[in-house]
Image (cartoon, rainbow, N blue to C red; front, top):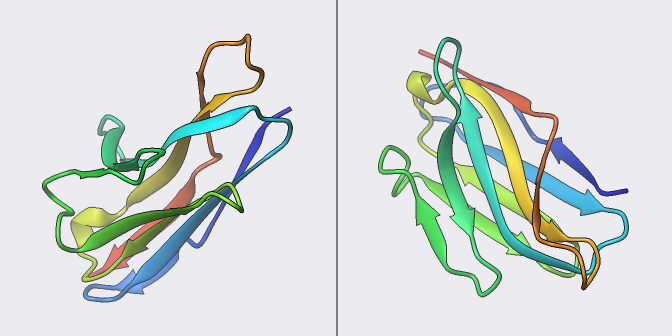
Length: 121
């Protein structure tokens, strides 16, 4: 059974930095895209950043130049380095990993449990 375990959230002042991690474990055939989404109170979940298997990245306009997504394929882990944090970055952050658990099974989306990021002004 695949599990995603997130870590690294917390409370930080505006202008500060945090680094989120999400490690995938369990029986897996392959991992494709990895990414981060966030959901603020009363708002829909939105894409923050994704990174493909080949390393190509995509960012939401609101975080470009401040956030950096990376992955360590040997550790099945995706990271989100968040710098110059703003109060509007406050949300629950969820990692998303597209995993194929067997060669004959389709690629499926897996989600982490979510980690709270709070940025104070």
